[in-house]
Image (cartoon, rainbow, N blue to C red; front, side, top):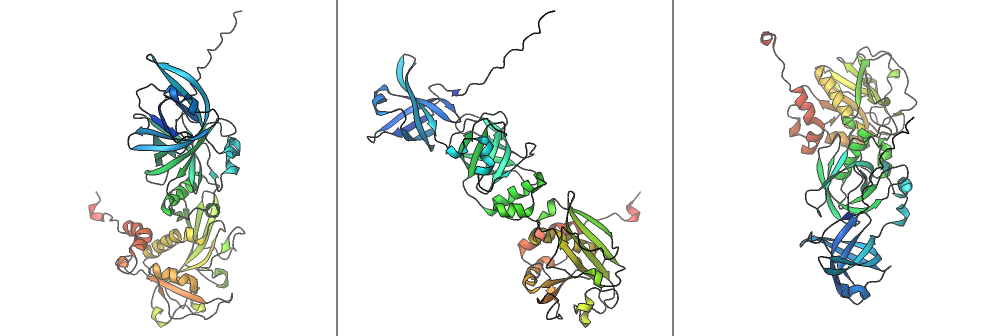
Length: 449
């Protein structure tokens, strides 16, 4: 029986990228006597390089010495990377003899093991290998050379990338421009600085590239916070907040469910009463026109509340017994937001805007005149910024011993003219998309064939 055919051994890629004299990637450093020694790079890897210079510098360069190596890839663009001299040898090209100097780039010794990266980088949020986002880097040292990376981790000072082909030839301290393509965020360019590459080992399974942001802004971190929440279902807003990320509005990941009010059912043990609209509907005997509203993130219940549709405040109103209305509301139709509870890992600031948008949408579509909400003195100012007005009548103290307030948003005419009374940023963020949705045109019966 013939012996099985042996598979041909895989050809391993070279550890270094060999360059030729004439590519003009220059390297300079200053020796101990203050003299500038210059040469041309002839090989390159993620952890070091080799360059050639005049043989007369042989005695000036010592193996084991540390230098600040300045690398020029054109006359106006350079960066400095710290290196250690590892070896020296002679090198010949076209009959000319040179001194070849091999150097290793300095790196953080405490990050030498890739499997410990998650515990060594502060506030790192690791991403799964199935991450949908990717980064594109064009190495300015070479002609038209683009590399693509998976995003494996994000922290408030930078990112950790995994090259798709496991090579990138980027050196520590090299400035680069990275194009990020992230779900839920428009593609954008950002300036970053190479911190170092990690060798192929540990559970990460591939080379990792550590990059630091050149400039950290809240707007930048907000983009990555949105991406993380879309990509990683197990990461909560509270986790992001503890790691140092800003809190985004969650309208991009919340699923909304409406249902008929089935009477008092109690609060889910995983939810907590909100400081806004905390009034418990179970204290009211009848709410025949109420509707339940629930917000989910995948299978996790994030928030629940009731919308009570009231045509006569003297009948079936949950807020009238609390002193919310005066005589001006006797013939007004109102929608009361009550019994609002939310998940403790999802702060009110992250869900308030999508909650209000859906409440306003329901009230306008039902052709009611006002949306009325119970709040506190501290949150009353927030509602003023959103276009709500305070109701004149109020109870001085609620059961919890805090000042109880009521605010209302007039929606008799939908959202028309609202942009005249509130800040432009508020209109853009809270009301503009809702206004466009409500302004949609529908065909008349005579237009339908």
